[in-house]
Image (cartoon, rainbow, N blue to C red):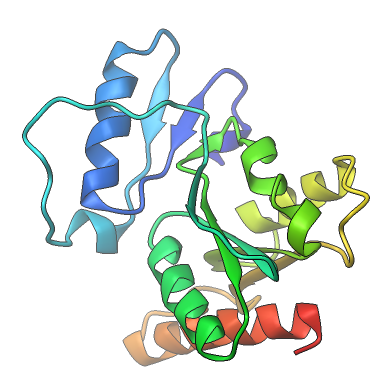
Length: 190
């Protein structure tokens, strides 16, 4: 909902290290910025350098390169996508992994540039499919001049049902690494 507000920049870090840079950038930025933190990232543990550093708002980052499929994921789903790309690599499938870092404005150029190589784009998020970030991103990908896209961009999201209160049901709905890997294989016909 925040990313639909005109003029509002929305960042979504996927790690503790990745949260400090956008936060420092947001403080110095000329426009209003919201930093969205996932509960698993916010309560996680990790090393954050003490030295000053910033990350550009509005720029995605390529996390790893591959030639078969592009997996775009944000927040905690970047970690799931990393595990999924490892599963895919075990099956001989090379996945390009992109982390948007900023949801609004979204950087379609970085996310879509590798499509020329693979022709397959999978966007992964934790929310249910209807109205999620993936749905809008997949739609926008179809509008880009991507003649190399071999099939429509796909969204790997949670099941299209209300959020669960029970941890076991939430875990079942959550698109884990195996489900993301399976979706990527289905796209490329593997």
